[in-house]
Length: 299
Image (cartoon, rainbow, N blue to C red):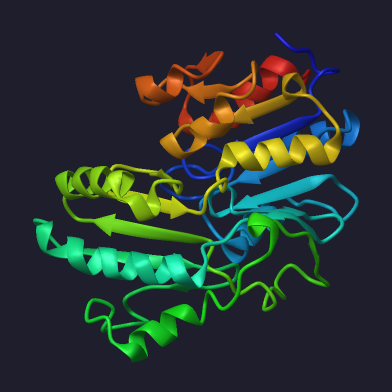
């Protein structure tokens, strides 16, 4: 097992991992320990989430992250990675206008197959569009399409990669692209059916398709995963996979968990997730991250 001197980057999932399940806050003991590790051991810390940047910022505030600390935010399952200290986007991978239009057509055609209602959300960096914003999202008329495409008005060159400086993380108006599509289902069988259909569809064969629970499907551009975001951070920081400590509990964490020999999960995670992890901890969920960190660092 790696020692505290070996680890240079910790990457933690949010929901079900760093955040307590029901109350969505962080255990105070965990907050204190994370800050100690960052300051005393000079270790970088990253949160990796399906959320967008605005949804992640309250977590940063709760962790009491200081401007001089090495902290990174991976949003929308790896579609974008931000260096909080330098206010720099290290990597951005987006869904182009053309593919967003194809998805809307595909969803309209697939919808009649579902047993119960479903809905989708379109994530951009600082806003989430859903059927409350677009009441006629199933009718596929030009007005609805225009509203949706306002969150995906341009694409980056070189396969969606970009490095962008921003004055303030909240000021993300310059990044309007669609980062993620999330589809919600009332019936688990509909989720399974949709996942099978979209994975076989030729237009979406190269997309990253995963889920954070049994009622949703999450779609991001090719190469937009937590694992690819971890690879980008490793290259950015000039470190090795052996120097990373990924922590997660869900299917959308597997792409990063399988990259490191130090990957850790909770005993209540699925057997599929546990199969990619070196360490499986048996503890209350609210102490999950704290107990993993104790394996590698002296408290």
